[in-house]
Amino acid sequence: MEINLDINIVEEEKKKKTFDIEIKELEKIKKKIDSKFEEMVNNILELKNNKVVITGIGKSGHIGAKIAATLSSTGTSSIFINSAEALHGDLGMISNGDIVIAISNSGNSDEILSILNPIRKIGAKLIAFTGNEKSTLAKNSDIVINIGVEKEACPLGTAPMSSTTATLVMGDALAVALMKKRNFTENDFAKYHPGGSLGKRLLLTVRDLMHSGDELPVLSKEEIIENILLVLTKKKMGAVCISDTGNENGKLIGIITEGDIRRALHHKEKFFTYRAKDIMIENPTSVQVESMALDALHLMENRESQINVLPVVKDNNIVGIIRIHDLVGLR
Image 1: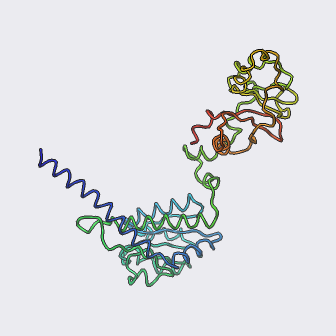
Image 2: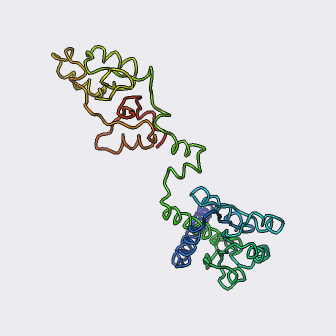
Image 3: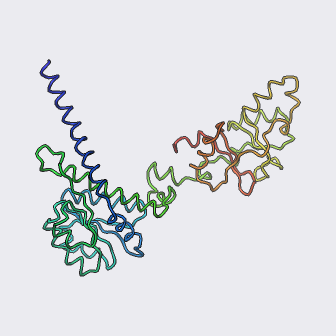
């Protein structure tokens, strides 16, 4: 039993050592970032109708594909080309004026070197992500980004681990820098990512989730308390909106929530004499019908006292109501 325990401890230490090695190498890479990184960012920002092309082979290719996908989803037109496939026709995907980021830790991968001259003839600018600044790739590139590591996490020192992590993080740093320069927002991201729960979170508007028509509880300021209670119970929205006409599309002038009813009950002797105007909250917080649903959620939550329901308006006229329960899935 003790032997097994010792073996488990050793295995756990080995796992932790992998993290330690890669984190240490990333710290070193961070210190290598210089003006060349800024130059790369500015070159990409200056692209008009052109794109960024990422190319690599093997593990570098897998990392390159991920970098291209990240750039594309964050506002930078980008594609990935496998360096081997480029030799057999995929170079046609590169256009004059494009920026090609070639990834090779050694800087001497045969497939990468074989496409350098064709890339030049096409008229694309070349940026190298390499760990060897004296390599053929580096010497033939316009900008060289050093992603070299001193130690791979692989215990044999053969499989690329620290180096691929460093390349991936450098690609993420590039994407983030471009996003900040472009003032890229959540709404911008939603344009490129409409699918799944993330797209839903970023694209849904208040109109998509609000309750309107027969579901909308709306009365006039002269309505008696009995009718207010009936509408609250029937509509089950947690509130009744008050408009100047007593109908949908009338001007919003107030709201009565279940909390307001409970507070009014403290005055038992007067309760059944109340009309809507006596207990309503005047000029309540509301949300525009075309606002993003996520903004409505923030409006409800980011305040001293959270509110659970919002009147929905268009030009100050009541058109719907939305509850925090309708929005919790956006968190």
